[in-house]
Length: 262
Image 1 (cartoon, rainbow, N blue to C red):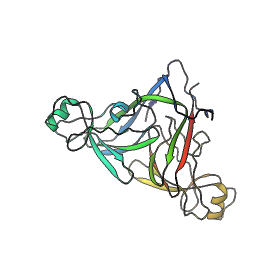
Image 2 (spheres, rainbow, N blue to C red):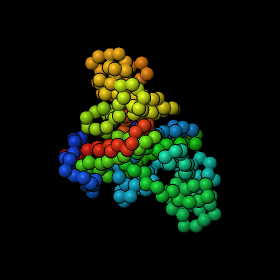
Image 3 (cartoon, rainbow, N blue to C red):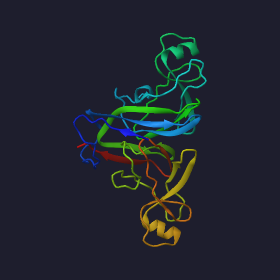
Image 4 (spheres, rainbow, N blue to C red):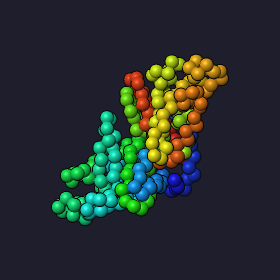
């Protein structure tokens, strides 16, 4: 997964943002893109880590290039959007192909449901979705937008949450920069669970603070992080553009993330 950030006269650098900023701050001078491959006849769990160039995070705005359109609705790239309980699917069409398939006129490029309604839900920064490539050739989806400056907040809700690290950097969730507010339980009942995308399926690991890991696995000197069922600490570095699920058992928790370009 190749990442390029086009930073107008700036070097990309990660840093914890000042806590005095309570709203998201966008810099029009910091724009970028990154590429996410999807194998032929395959899936990828894709992260949106940018704000769309129009500021609205519309799927057609964020997903800038590389998608496949077919006026016969056979090999179109498919977006699977998490509704909170299941995935809803939408096919990608260029405007003329949408006109052809839905017997319409004046259609625009974008993702459409099965009866020709344009998908207009925002792909919020720091969240994830599936892209499916039904075609027989690999594709490379390009995500385009602005890099968020200062703090950014996502809510970890009860249940399953399709997330990503908010900024386009490759690291793991226990890195201090990421500030993941994991919920831990020494009895391994209400711990947050990460479902890590392997490329073909999800692998699950529970979050423990060090003391809770010691208690659960009869160990000593454990550190905060995600552990498998027998107590092995997992690094789980997330590549740029890769999403994951967090399963949360309690009430809403605010995940405040900071990133600056210096």
